[in-house]
Length: 332
Image 1 (tube, rainbow, N blue to C red):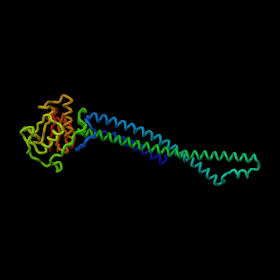
Image 2: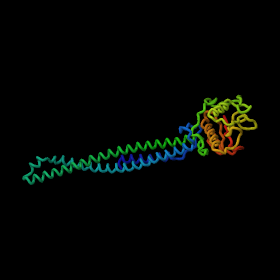
Image 3: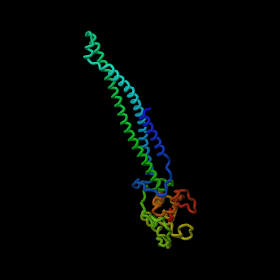
Image 4: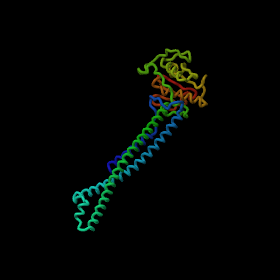
């Protein structure tokens, strides 16, 4: 294989490796999710469906480009072999003319003893000239075919790079959409694909120092820490205005410390979700908290039999409550 052929083969192999990496299963999201830019009111299911479709379209373009490159590489190798052969033949022609001198009409005329011999030699000269011209034309055309094949190959490589960029973009879009809900929680697609960005809470830039329960709780007669009150206000500002309860006694966790709130799916009281609207409300609220965890100081989120920790993501939850009737928020 020629050096060019080897380069093309290596390029095709590199593409195959890249595709294998790009099509690997998505890993769970990290602790600091990014904001998906899917836009509008699209649900997570819509985003994943459209992203998957665009991914497959880009993959089809990539596969077609790889196939085309293989065909062009084969043509290029054939053309190169033809040029190598013609180069040798043209070289031999030039060498022969150099040794014998160029045959011309006058030299043939002077070397002819009779008219018949002159005509015979002139015919030979014409035939030789025609043969040499044909070989030179064939040689030039072969060289041109290499140039055309290289240009076509370059165009296919550019198309391949566009397809790889599209694949990479769709992979990242899917990762962003999944990151919104922590990476591996079941939402049935009923969750808005974007959520507002919360303002950083007290201590966000200083390592979340400990706080006391010094602020009045808007939901009870108890108290909240400044950071929890800030998170409460940010959730409200994001449009989650159904029933919520924060401070309460008789709990060994964060509620009696003013560092937790339970966000109901109902306008009054608590009951397990049984409509898509209630499920989506809980999913959207959960997504807002997860997405803004590093801004609000989220310690963990519990929702619909699942618990999310910034360090580990989602896992199953089987505590004293299934949390199918509210989203629990604990603040550091």
